[in-house]
Length: 145
Ligand code: RB5
Image (cartoon, rainbow, N blue to C red; front, side, top):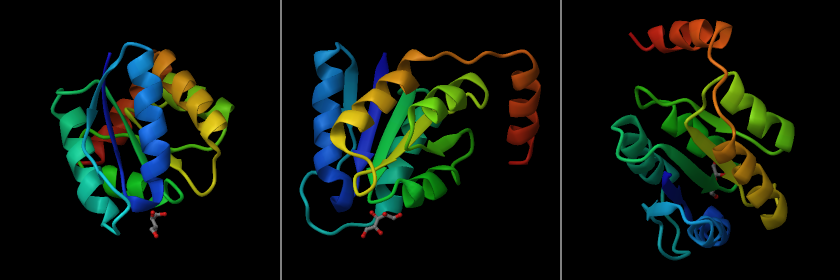
């Protein structure tokens, strides 16, 4: 599994710990920054990760900011992206099964590192159910036109 990851300064520590977590699991993790805690702009990182997922360079993406919300709003502006801001395990599974979400957004200020790793594992390990959900995802993606 090829995974894109990125954060702003507010999500840096969680991004680092998730990067290590997935590398230990054997994933190929491409880190789009940020690379230190200097203040930066989350839309710039969101765009890099989103374009790599939308273009097929990576299968899924993980973005971390303070809340996960700014990252999800920015990533969803890129065509082909279905980014979900998630803070619980049920939603992590459901957004893969029903929405075919391709980017997980987490908030370092809202979710601890243990829960974040559990959420991220559920996200990457859960498949899309297709069927009636495919129809709805197709309708959602048609809104981009
Ligand atoms: C940065 O202070 C913060 O605004 C950002 O990380 C994020 O939470 C935005 O949604």
